[in-house]
Image (cartoon, rainbow, N blue to C red; front, side, top):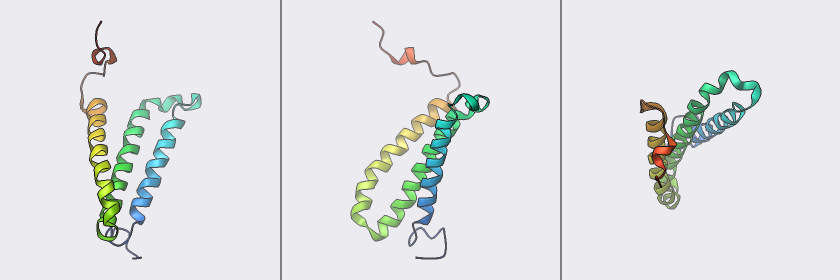
Length: 111
């Protein structure tokens, strides 16, 4: 193990720290739904998207390590990373970039 935190090729500590931070923000997202945290409820969606972003970055860092040391794990994770990037792009578009709020009735078929 290297003493350099950003040596992704030989040390997977950064990916572990990113996973832990993502999990922490996910717990914060859950906590923001509680009644005593009502003043922070406007930041709840941002917290959820940041949590997902940290998890995707952790998977990316972990994959770089696996590419050099565990090629079979890398091949398995590669498919999931593509799906996670697409989901993250959709979340960022619908909750951050899009100007008007998301209307669920537009997505459901009209009968």
